[in-house]
Length: 428
Picture 1 (cartoon, helix red, strand yellow):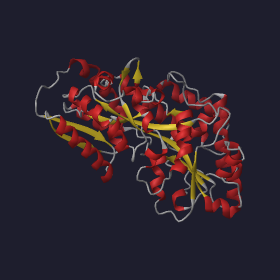
Picture 2 (picture 1 turned 60 degrees about the horizontal axis):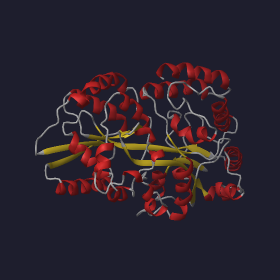
Picture 3 (picture 1 turned 180 degrees about the vertical axis):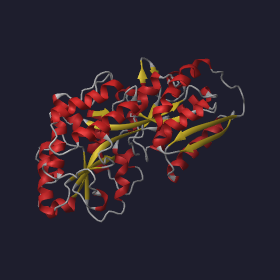
């Protein structure tokens, strides 16, 4: 499961449409009473195995709920999501359910775009609502209401190339963990040593390319830093914690040369870098790897070993013409049995399924020994990606201002971060 910047320019115009439409579409819309109910869910996968799993679950649901005679899955790309949803709502043909990234949760909830699923989930026999780990569902809750059920909560983990560390004669992440010295500072040192020995990057951020600030969250969180506060009302990118964290990354890029500079490409999956941070699901990219690899939780920092967790939920749209049926399908999709089926692709939040055996599933890459420390870290110190009401505006302002003021050689970082907050604050 990949999460990227997604909330980009196309939503800028669509956001106002979303706010206007959803503000009145939920409570005032009449529920269709047709017995021949067609449901549609928007999702951003075209993977045949994943689609087959959802199709199988949908067929089983229809066998048990005869009023629902058709369930369609509309596959799009993540960067199309907001435009697709707003366009379809405006056209009077809204989807009934959708995947939604956590970065957008606050925006859609405040807009009134999502239906509260808690009453249906709690009243569904055998659902076991309390099995949903509260801390991992927190971004979707307002009081007793739950506006989405997370179906994929993936940690950003550290992958490393064992062969390159051995060739360079440098302490690997596993060596540093064994010494109880697994910190970003020690990782920086080993990355520089590997680069000095082999003339390749010691560390590359996956899916980053200096355009996706969330890939810095493992480092930021370990320093107790984020770009804004928990309420998404104040920019905190100019805090001492953020400065210390971004300084380390800046030094790796421009001083140590152990991480690629803007415009430089390095493919960890092709054996061109010592280590990378990527989602657990990215392990599939190692299927044909010609090197031995390891996987560990991301390093610790002054604030501890907090693990950054990306997340997506399945939501029911308030504008749905078959809202009750859609909520029932949501409950069926995310019950224990079906969550277990989907866990082979997406890390669940159900406490009963948060274990290495479930997450490894049928993977030919992962093993329980590899996954066990990742699961333990995510359960004990996992922290979900932040969200903001103007998710698009704040992400664009943050990425562009970091690019302009921070991701440059010889940057005056304290002054640069003040400029970053000046750009971000109007969107909070």
